[in-house]
Figure (cartoon, rainbow, N blue to C red):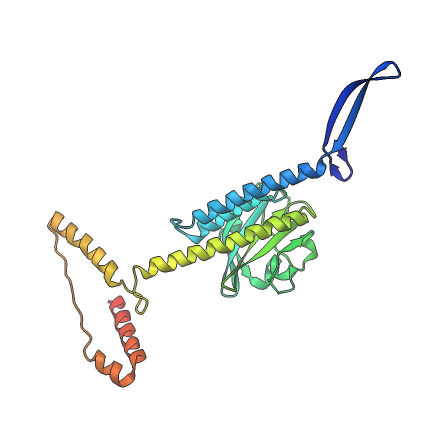
Length: 285
């Protein structure tokens, strides 16, 4: 049954009864709309939790942050019914650069970037960038730029939900989902975006932590060159290859003279600077 306020669901029961000597059907109708909507919302939440769990579990082993962003965006568009297209842009200095997109023309969006102050989020939050904004009519914002859609039609995006991404308290980027209809998104969609945003921040933070640990497991934090453990691993591979194919290679050992004197007389910060300078010189060879 449809009403101006939306769909309604009813449960009914009937019994055959005798009324004034005539057989009649006694029917009862119960409005179960609230129960049905709650069931749908619960099912949607369960599916969304499963999707976010998939994203969280995919962090280890993913080769790039862009891949995580693409997976997040795919799940976001699936979870928000009115969403047709979307993008995730990450901050680089004062710019936002495209990390993932769906539904836009590749040639128009692949290398797309814009100043932070030109983003939907900045305009919708008056530069605060600290909350999710639902934009019912994008044309209400000043000087907005829209990207052609993938289907090549003349349609343009007209409404949006845009959410900031923060990592360790710093503005890191923005996730947007859009529709070609005006006022396409509801307050419930805002709640879904909040849920997605929270898990996106966790997934990205975990990825960055994993990448940092992987980097430190291979490189020296002072000089940025291979550490001893990783060097020994590479040396073992080179030695095995040389023995297998009867190749030769050179192993050069360096020693910094008077490093202890520098540390004792000028301090360890000066000694660290000397080591970094020496390592930088080796990289240029």
